[in-house]
Image (cartoon, rainbow, N blue to C red):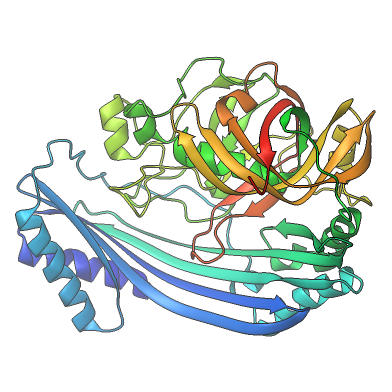
Length: 466
């Protein structure tokens, strides 16, 4: 028995075929159920949910390519979408690099969604929030807990018809402590595969411990410091590597430093994209997804490709086509640095600024440096080296002789992420990885698996105020 999404995708392919006989057509029909429970002042103040079905149509006809998407409620919405894309195709510029459609192929096997997460209620999310508030032990808290459920189908004029489901959850929260100068914030984030594994109490306690430890920070001179980056900070490295470095379009256009086969990273670094751990088993072109090793022991092995970038590079798609086909290019959305003792371990809790035992072990190896919780407001200065400028937040501490000695005021930094993970600059990788959520609001948020990193040098260029 077919699903409603399969029927919708098939109907759209047939409608385009009637409007543009002989056209190559791919249609995705996705139903996204996204629910978000927000809290501030330690009280839930908003519970929102949306249930939206979106149809995306890609057409190639007589050498021209166009695409469009729309939320579909009734038959008239689909008809209007097809008319709009057909009209755009007729006047689109020539597309000589069209890679053609994929022949019918079975999707890869992905981890089935957790049903309790897929069908979580506001009460289920409220219980996680309650646990976070209780874990913060009296500190003011704010943040969100979200769950998503995706039903997807893809059909093409080449005879492809595949479907799948996925569910995700995540929490991000801060705890705030009063300090002599303003307030001190601590943060905790996690994105496990099951809502039952989202330990609100432990996350609240972690955020509170950081907030209490970041009281009365001192200002240090800018310069290059040895650092331990916690998982939240590492997630920014992975975000920029995914979209700006390992992206096949960026590599083809020589906007990326990545070169397959080169020893570009420290031997301690292995980077893997694993979309099959959570998600649908095919990409937006119907290509089966795969677990892809991008870096192995410091050597770049692969980059992410869709069918278009793969054809340009003379290789095959890795199953990383994105919804925004003509924009940023194929990117890894489930990227992770492999920790020293396995990929999916759960961090043990520890007291103080080094909020888990894996981080504390790295701090013990620092002679004089900084423990950094989080980065934000990061912007690319040079895409060829992934030179990034940004700010620290949610806690920075001075480390001396393996011990956290005092809180430090926020820094601005300017750092080439290529150099940050280069041979000789990675002193250690944490033994556990924390799954960190990406964008709060998108229905298919990235999920990055982040161990802490001990780096020999990070370039801090000034205080946060300038």
